[in-house]
Image (tube, one colour):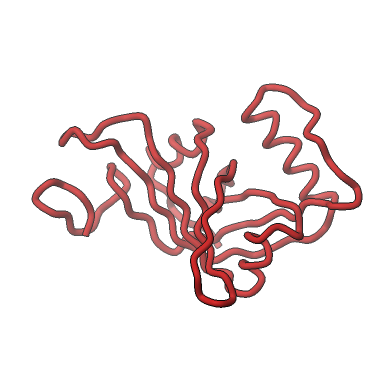
Length: 151
């Protein structure tokens, strides 16, 4: 599914920030994990993880998720900008896809190849179809408080 991501939101994601991924455990409790991510030409978010990780298990149970990305730029009101992305994840379990993606993502974030891949614990490739974008920045077009923060 394609999403018309605001150019500054795309630029923030392409600047290699860490992101917080929020998923829901089967018992309803939230789970937060720090991840590296990328954005596709179609405006989807992608990341990888070993299949056995909690985030992968949670997304298999409930594919809805939220990503939180903090910018280094302050908005006009002096507050640090942040990007919140809600979406629905699909999981590609083909080991070659996940491992190849993780090696490319490792290069993007570190500038070197050689991500430590384990054949016994292959990575899955997770793609998030964006359903909502909010936060504090030019990508937020909804209602705000008098301070300029989203409601």
